[in-house]
Every structure is written in structure tokens, then in C-alpha cells.
Image (cartoon, rainbow, N blue to C red):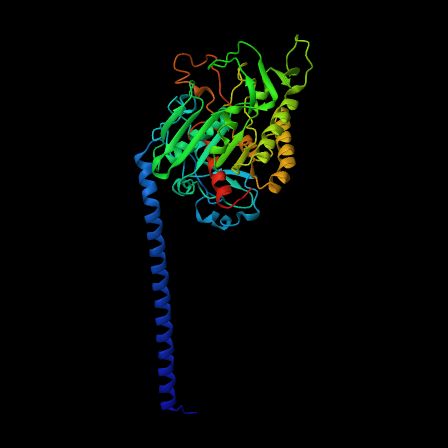
Length: 438
């Protein structure tokens, strides 16, 4: 059979045309992929170079971990799915995850750090505790934005009321905000325990008020913690150092706890009614639980009955991490990484305190909503429990092992290094202010 040469020529031309079109499409696709990769790589270089440059220039915060593909580091693309889902999220339930970003400030860039929280200056060399970030189980809370916070606080006032943990927290906030605008101290009491700062360009006032019991207390203790007489607590009277100023505040962060474990004589209606741990005084042992509940009832009733409508954050108790003893008996905290959930249980004292706090907050929260009181629970207890690595330990003192490496050194396993885990509490306040998460 003979073939038709015309037909064969047309088929050949069509075949060539198809090949040409296919080749053109493949070249276009390859070019598109190449262009996309180049743009992506350029984007990575542009965003990562300043950070890499900053880390290279500073020997203060080298990232101490090797982050594998299986580790989700906040701020990377892996965590983007957690954004904008905080409406039904409990931001106080989650885990600590590695974060190569590190803190916003350094111990050199902030001048508000007290010497016993300035762990790096005092000689702490392991820096792993700086590279963790709190990640709630169901969402991702944004990193604290000092510019946005100061804009929110323009023409406002915020007060931290409570014990030394409140002072620890306010110093953390000051260190972060000072990266945008330095604070001007305008007041301090005789012992420098209560202070007031202003941020002039934002007309924002920040205060810390020393009121470790929140209620009226007669204390006989010097700066070193030496007590010359028992504490006397008036369980039916609030400490007027903070109540007299309450109407000046738009926002309040309030908390107490640990001081109620001290020996104390209890008064109600100006009559001694009992005590906590006072052997030999022929008084009824009522226990710290009784006094702490009474104190919180007074505090919450004050907020609900006040005509002033401030936004109040009630911070739950902070657990300590002393091991093999207490602060006065050789206890220490030398761990270098956070616990995972389930690896540690609260001691009985902290569990009792937090139980009282949650019960009394629940009792008053319904009344508060009826009376238009904006009362928020800042439940930092469990997330703090997981951070045994963030305390000053022996580095509450300058170079504690300079003279004797095996000498007995007092440890601080309650307060937090600055920078340190307590910085994350500001992320939570910001989230609760902006999105109302709890």
C-alpha cells in the first residue's frame, strides 16, 4: 500500500507544532518556578539578615539549641496556623517551646533591673532559659508589642499592687517599654518599694505599690528579711496604701500569696482571733488558708462595691522551685530547661492557695459582671510551675562562687531573672487587653 505524501507532510507539521507548544509551556513553567524560588529566597534573606547580623554582633544571647525540623519554633511558618484563633482559647494552658528570637531587651539595655534579678551581670553563664516562649494549647499569642501597648495606654494609668513578684513583673514591663521610650521616675517611698514612673510622650503613668498582704499589716522586718517581731494582720481591713489611690488607676494588676505563709497574729474587729504558726502563744491556730481567703474576699468586695470602674487583672500565686530544702535551709534550683506538662506537681501549699484564689474569683466574677466590674483572671501559676530554670538561684548575688566554689550560698528560687520567663506575662496582659482572651 502506498502512502499519501501530502497527508504525511501535514501530520509531520502538526507533530512539530505540538512539540513546540509543549516545549514552550515547560520553559514557561520552569521560569515561573525559578522566579518564585528566587523571590522566596530573597524574602528570607531580607528578613533574616538583620537578626543574624544582630546575633553576630552581640555575644550576650547566642541561641543555645539546635532546632530540628520536628521542633516548632514560634515565629516560623510552622506556627502561623495558631494566629487569630484566640477567641475560645485558654492562654494559660499550654507548653514552653524553643524560641530562637530571644528577649526584646538585654540586661545592658535596661536600667530598671534590680541587682538580685540581674542574673547575667551576677555571673550566670548558661543562657538557655532565655530561648523559650509560652505557647497555649489551642492558639498562638503574639509577642508583646511595646509600641502598640504604649498607644493603648496613652493618657492612662496602670498600677501593679502586691508583693515582690509584682515588683519583679513591673520591672520586666519597664525593660520592654524602655526600648521605645525611657520611663521617668517621679516618685519612690523611703524604702524604694513603691514607685511611680511616667512616659511623657504618651502621658502614661506606671506604678508599683508595695502591699504584700493586700490587707492592713503591721510588719517588723528589715530589707534583709530579718524579723524582729510577729506580723499582725487585720483581716477585715484593706491596706490603704493602695485603696486610697485606686480611683487614679485605669488598669490594675494585683496579686499576693507567699507572705501569708509567715507567722502572723490575726485581728478582726480589733480583737485577736487567732494566728498562723504561733506555738506557745495560747492562740487558736487558724492557718494561712483562713487568712488568705478572708483577704481575697475583702479585695474582691472592694472592687465590686467601688464606683470606680478600672480593669483589674487578678494574678494567681507564683510557685517556687526550691529542691532539697527551703531558702533558709540550703534549698537550690539548678535546672536548665523547662518541665513538660505532667513532669511536676504543685506542692500542697501552692495548690491550696490557687484553689482559694479560683474559688473566690468564681464567687465574685458573677457579681462583678452584674456591677460592670471588668475583673480578669491572670492564671500564671501552672505556666510558671513549668519554669524551674528561670530563677536567679545563687546568682541573686554578684559572682557567688568567686571565693569558694563549694561554699554554702543562699538561692532565690521564687523570683525571676530579667530577662526571663516573667517577660511572657506581658504577652498575656497584651492579649487580654486587645482580644479579651482568658
